[in-house]
Image (cartoon, rainbow, N blue to C red):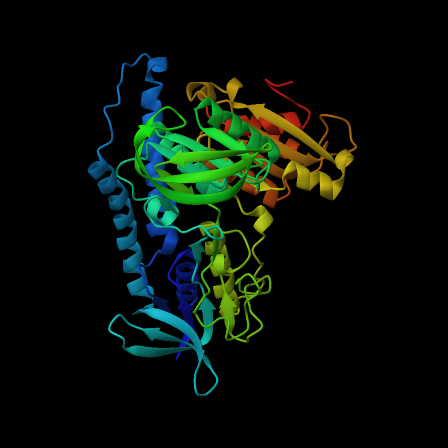
Length: 490
């Protein structure tokens, strides 16, 4: 009998385990695959490794701007794989060490069950077929997510792929069609384009990155088109099929032979057939709750998500859920935060606050990067009305390091309005949201998370000295403008 048994060793699972162990609880962790989950082995980390390489290649392509004469002679697939795998292995070894030190680890496929005494536990089936019952006073479901496809679309793992397969390329596709312009789809477009791939992104909604602020979506779409990436929004996919074609001149005037993917798209009243070597279905991820015993315990909604309160507790006493199995932000750091809250609640820590997902930073590692926290402009205006919201922007085109990076991005600050004279303390209400498009946006968002979470006033933030020349001084400029005291802006 353990204090806590955790089913799933991804970010949510191991974060719960580590915090519970730090609180002095006896912890068991069950994982069928490798500790680290999708994030470490099939998601965040391998994709960022490739995106880092792609970013370096982007700099090579524009090296003449710096006075350098650099050329790209092609991709060493084995070298890329070694780099990508090396990053994963290094992180996995460290994680394995911590799991072994802080938990009792059970390798095998787990299912939530009730023991003969009615208590909760996890039945673990090892690769050799043997089973072990691991009982706990508390059990945490943390089985993560799986890639979604479209109805009627067969993912063969070759021509039609999800991110699970597409991350492992050693030769980039000559032509790719990406269905879905969320974070996954947009990151893959950024990943492949520098290697010379012809990329088309298809999105059913009216803009890319539809969960982000509309100005950020527009800025990224414009940047993609300048990079030669075709972006089709408001486009519905009628069919995706694989065809065998003889080498011939296709609709684009290029030789196409062998197995190809054909995506029939309806856009602006017309039907287009897009032909590609690789079709990436990037329509999101869903909860990995099939066949884990959760349905039998009655904790799943009609979409397969675990139903919990704001602290992660289900209606079954002693049963909790964290991470992508909940209908919250499907981000690794959101899962970390949820796991910490659950562990502290189990440990009966006083004054545990639930995770505020509005104040959880959202990051997309496309080029240009996008990061945000708090409310979008549309959300703020819906909540407070047009008269209660003000917006200021600071462009990276007026920032020294932004110019060096060739950025057309910006920092956008959304704040409540005030009723005292401009320049006086408390001129405006608190910062409600910050949205960044540009180089290192995913790093710069750190300061903004403090601003929105602490409901800081623009004039308080404007008084903080920002180093020059830096990218993050664009944040200071935006806060100064929001306080009615612009430095270089107007």
